[in-house]
Image (tube, rainbow, N blue to C red; front, side, top):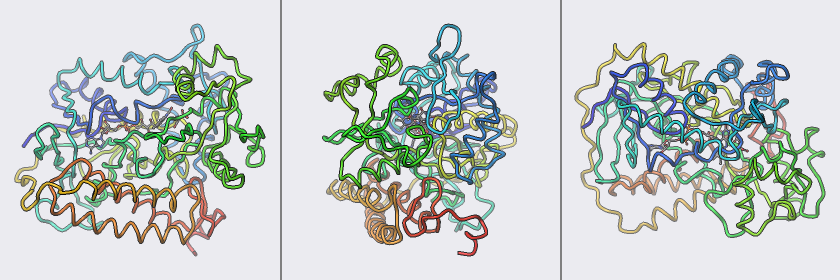
Length: 532
Ligand code: FAD
Ligand code: SIN
């Protein structure tokens, strides 16, 4: 059993921002940070386009960034939260610059990029590997802080609550408390109890629930699934963002390689493989319309034309500037025999971002006492029905900061809970056949991709729900009898994520933002929604 003042599950931009700030202000506190594989692997690491923030006040304004975010969110953003994030964002970006993050410049000024749905150039970036650069600076800083203890290969299995003391909890309980987490130490294969006065869930996304995703293999929605099991409030799980342009690779690749939206912001144009433009048929912003519109348009064109991919045309762009801004994308294309200046880049939509998740309030608190959450695992109210490009790194930093302010004020009133039992692994044995797990993961991804993807319908959702229930029953059986492994925990979590996305989609009887269903193709106003 381990005791720590603060447990942070996750070392992406959200978890690290919180840990760095808290460790600096309160060197007396012990902060334990967990990663399920290693600290370099997270969605943060792969962020390409950059961080959206109002930077040039001569051309841009908070009002414009707020309007763009609300427009993308299609009526479901929390306007107060949008204002908080947009107005506090630039301050948070300045802080990470002070911590050593580099962003590209033109002379003395930052080079601000453009992405879909933005009415101004406001994306700070470092070439096409902004996330890697932010993570580098944060991890280097964390190394200098003696009270931050990052544990790699420490896989959180479940968040601890009164449930583990034998109490029956339901979603109606308003007094659920978090006492820490049960964690599988992958070096020893032992399950440890980590108790904390306060816990911050920062476990990132869940793209791996789909066959094709830009998210790394660690993105299995563990935090959302753990929070769901502990009866925390969740919302908006039906809104899964598909990035319009992952690189089409006939050999298949997990994760799918992203061709940043910043490439379209730089001037690349979406075309069919015959060279025909099509985006003007869908939105006046053409290739730079918000993601939900572009992804649906590409999906529709692929189905209409019977093509496996659409294309990005970069041939007219300035080669030198392109190579300076997008070296990784250029090299990746080259490695597949595609010369971005002679050939079209073949692209397809891929699951990219979960807009819903653990419901948090304006300080990042969840419905569970002493448990906060920030980053992609949350539904903060910023993204509504569709996230505006490059708003997520910003959101993670803003709420990590707000949580830090609340935690340093309240932590001295908290104590570590006594009497928590150790994990009970009695009557379990090693898995006899890994295929029972790997095949179920494959089936799950097929179900979600074919029935709960960009375009949905009542029949598809019902099929998905029925098949997910079968997988759920089989997996729970396995879970009860088998020694825990990361694969089994991830399968169980992914089934929960699939179930949450599917049932949330079934409940939304309209099409809005990222949720499009052929049975209810129109957007309803709230009165109509209530009446249905
Ligand atoms: P992550 O960075 O994913 O970190 C999650 C952490 O939680 C990891 O350390 C992981 O090990 C840990 N963890 C998870 N489960 C467990 C567990 N069970 N036990 C222990 N530890 C666990 N957003 C933008 O704003 N701009 C962009 O340009 C951009 N580009 C992107 C490009 C790609 C290819 C992808 C995939 C995403 C992109 N995004 C972008 C989205 C953005 O990167 C993520 O939303 C953001 O980085 C999430 O940060 P996070 O800290 O919430 O989670
Ligand atoms: C991209 O670079 O296209 C990804 C940006 C994002 O997901 O916000």
